[in-house]
Image (cartoon, one colour):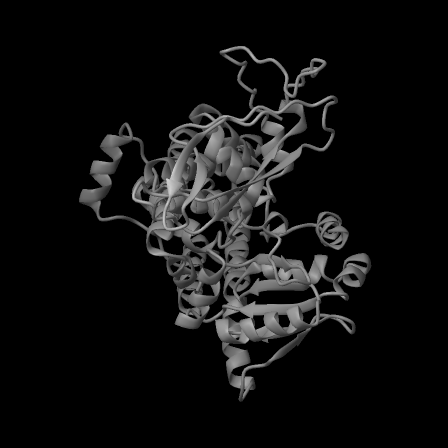
Length: 478
């Protein structure tokens, strides 16, 4: 390791010489052998103004993937490897984003260091992967109902279906980017408001309305003047409404995809930290296009492999109508649970039992959380803090799949288990999220016996039992 010399300056009132660095700073590291599991780098720094006023100390953590590390032998009698004046840039490895997409710290490090081309390529591929998660798959029956729909008594042509599908995906992508930028600019209340029981119920009613058209109860049409203009822009093709498909894609994004995932959380954190709304919105837009690509291929592929038009299309439309009804029930069910819980409970619950061995202490304010954290610190016990909401699908997946795993449950039993309930969009919920710079559930934080959060172990989004167990064991080894 070779450290730069830096500059010397007298800092009053301490009357002490301090070494400081200006502008860009480079460190060079040498390794005798290739690291097999990558390198975790933690940097402690403090910024100071020329007038002697210093800002609070900050800590940054980075993850360098092993395949991208350049190894050079350390010459005898030298503390660091020789380097050329123009070192070879470290190549970008997409597998690092792919394999570590549930690691917020590693994704954020790429956002801060990778070139724009690699950023956009990586997030497009991440979008494709996210298309097969429970957050995005509910959009498939909505898009299929558009592609396989009918208008004016006849089936929509394949060309028109492609226009409609692309309009749907474009609406989804634009709103995904806009929602992400607004969330970063205005705070996490935007996302929570869109996932409130009222919003979920309204969207479920919209799906029921669309299902009614598939059952033939009525036909959805734009005003004729609008339709003529849209048809002219679309090459005078006959069929459904492109503007309607675009709008439905946008609405689907706001409610049918309610998950906060690690890539999205990383982008939002990066945007909030740097203020680069253009880059953040662009990354979210490209990631949404990647999410839409498999949906488009599946929907259009189904259209290509189906036989010629006939009575079967009527039954197919009715089947899609049933799917939309089921999707409406699936979306609105958490909202019903919230209302039912509020009616059945005279006072908010303070405990939540996941299994016979796992009981979470439920908190709804920063004051309640702080009391539990201080008590655990006094007893030198580690804490697992789970951010939860009744409308959060991934939260319920964590409880049903990950927490109930026998090995995971055994490892969790040594922690003080705390659940921050942010179901209700209140000032207390916003304060709980802002306390640790979170944008929404699900998120799981770990604290050691000294009360210090282990930020590198944060979990955002759903995590499978095997990977979650690794996080628990890693904290135990520290």
